[in-house]
Amino acid sequence: MKFFFHYSVEDFTNSYILGPDALLIDPTTFDKEFLTMIEDNNLYIKWILITRPQKLNPRGLKTLKKIYNAEIYSRPQKVLDFPSNPLRQGQKIQLGELQIESWAFPEYSTDSLTFLIQNWLFTGDLLSAGHMGNTSNSFGKVNLMESLEKRIFSLDTDLIIFPGEGPPTTLRSEKLFNERLKKDSTPGYVG
Image (cartoon, rainbow, N blue to C red; front, side, top):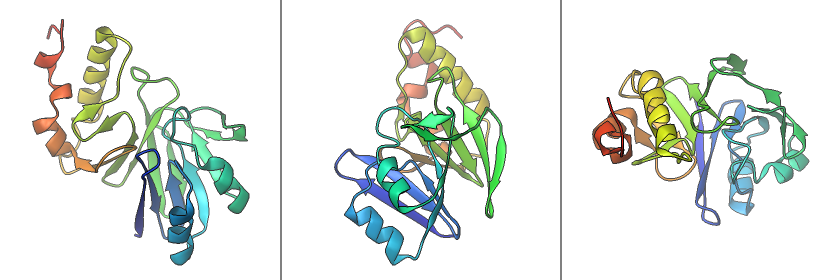
């Protein structure tokens, strides 16, 4: 399988492309370098997965849709006025050779998803190296930590996490070193 990575220095975000059929995850900034990478590798974007339609994750979508007739998949039915195939918690879809399972974490955001593809987890801004997505209060943080522990931290520790921002990491590293995920570091946590 081909794997391509684009880092935008403009907004410090990551985009990923998996092949041989071109599946793009989070088209953040669509710049000349990104287009050159796609074209130089003879890729044609067929599908786009959006981890979160807010923020910077779909920023390059308007330009992409002018060039490629790609189907969009996300939590809501529309992303930046483009129709999207809405996905729900635990739904599995087959796109080319890839089986994708979508996971919702409403404790973090009602419109976001993470995508499990083989032993890779694409988390958007939910989980990254040394960091967990922000919640509006400490109660929300505890709920999110419990959900992550039940649903992600119970998986194989060799799982590779590809975040929307920052470097890739592994589940093993996050279990050992991510201070934001330690229960005893949460003010008011009882458990």
